[in-house]
Image (tube, rainbow, N blue to C red; front, side, top):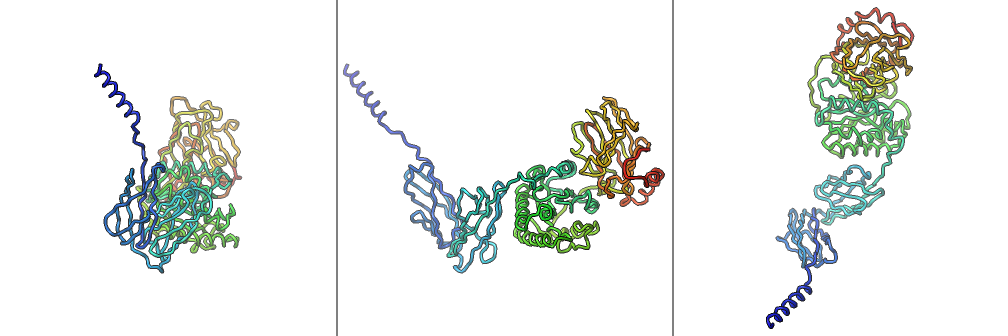
Length: 586
């Protein structure tokens, strides 16, 4: 009985002691950021962060050497060029950080940081601190509101988090007075008409498909921008000029920086060219009526976005070419070019090319664009830069085969045809084969004479009734003729089989002539309705087809061979050359 009593007393004692014992609390963690660029004689506060502030305590610091001193949670640099590891301890925490020191600057040195423009939601903008007018040769410390901005001190770049004008204090210590500069953080509203790319999207899709076929990330040099670099109507010999080079030209007439921002946020931003060469800005001033400040900021914002999307791409920017009219806008253009030349000069990834000073009014064909023979102003100036353009194997054979699927629309991947480095635009004879293999409702093949406008001037092989009977139809100046009422030549397609047609297309002095299976079937007098030729393209809709075995001769590239090819069909050409503008059947 006594033993039982003693056991009960012991058990109660243990239970009571256990219930009274306190659990060890979670004290959280202590973190202290590294301190970089502390100049001799400069002191900075040590910013300690306790994850659980209720357990914050007095901090003791331990380190080796005499390069720094620490007192009252402030560190002072005593010897330059050192990196010191520091251990911080409280009763319940341990943390480590480093302090790197630099030599003191003379007290008469001057720190300066220009104001910076940055955009909320865009890639970082660069900061360019100078000491005595030269790029700062040591780290700069920035003090700012971290709810408004984020600054990477090591990289000297800033991200805008909130719109507004935000003051930043820059310092390097060593007796040099700190400098306050402003980050102009801006919001961008892309909902307005300036950002509406709808007029250009069909051709942009064509260009996107062209990159998938012929472009290579890290290798291809991509020319983009406005009409100056549009191969359909202005720089028509681009591919002859850069024959043998891995280069593509994707300029789109009438576009502005706002349009190319949209494309950078879409298909263009997915590409990684070796180089981007660009002419842009004239339509900002003349069409969108941007003033100098607005045009300059729009250019800078677009290029910052481009660099963020294509970090490994070198950018070459031709200044805005002056037009031959409107002195007030010429002055705006001059202001923008001056500011952009300075802005590009600060950055290692973009090169400004001063062609505006070389392209004079007498070199322009319409007061805006250079005559074709003066595009050497651009190519010569580009060649004087450090650009490296990759070589690409080329062939003198005919245009590349075209393969289309049933689900492709006319403007989806429409193919402009290239031969010996140039688009087929005027004075050529093209021959080849067509295979039709599958159809859906309203299938048609389209031979268009205005690339980018695939509907207004086109010869058609069209099964308008979806019965398998393809007739020679057309659209001239947007007015369509399906060939049914005219009894136009027809070709029968049977599901599960292949319909093969031989074709010849002659385009002579802006008139077009089409033969199928050796028979002449259709002529266009003034094939574009504009009196000037544009690039040929072949496309289709609701039709699986292949265009292949193509051979071409052109007046420019082949001389006598072209003359002979035209002579072989001269009787047909002569019969229609003098007739009225429009479509004519035999």
